[in-house]
Image (tube, rainbow, N blue to C red; front, top):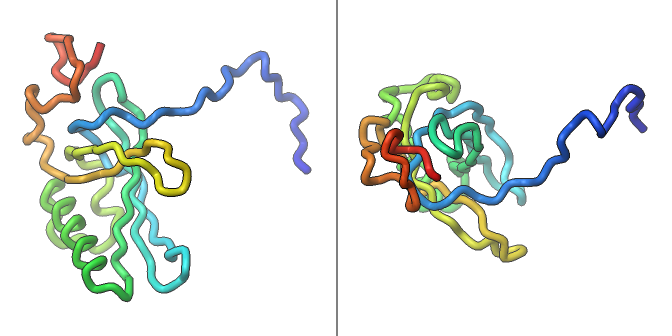
Amino acid sequence: MANLNGFNANNVEPDAGFEPIPAGKYPVVITKTEMKPTKNGDGSYLEIELAVTEGEFQGRLVWDRLCLDHPNRQTVEIACSKLSAICRAVGVMEPQDSVDLHNIPLVITVKLKEREDNGDLTNEVKGYGEKSSLKPQTQPAGNTDKTSPWKRS
């Protein structure tokens, strides 16, 4: 049990939940990283939290998981390849700790994917690049604002 004395729901907007952001390229920074064990305990993955830094979806979070320790060699190779892309995008080629990759602008390519467990749509990070690689013509579909190439109407 927790003491909620003093909380008044009339003073706080209710959480409406979030739909996934549309597929596209987004400027982000890595805000948090943490090594976690896999569900069945046979390895571990680096969970990466990315925050969108500009446009309509500024402040939204997207996550990626890099399975850096796993019995399946191909799984580890894919994770290492993604980590290499992140390192190149942020200009840190030999990080000593995952925190070395935090708060440096980069670009992610986001896709929508159907979850296997419930069929809901979720975001999946499909690529990483340097922030300078983001050009107005690579903006998410539906942008009609000519003053900011990343803002959607």
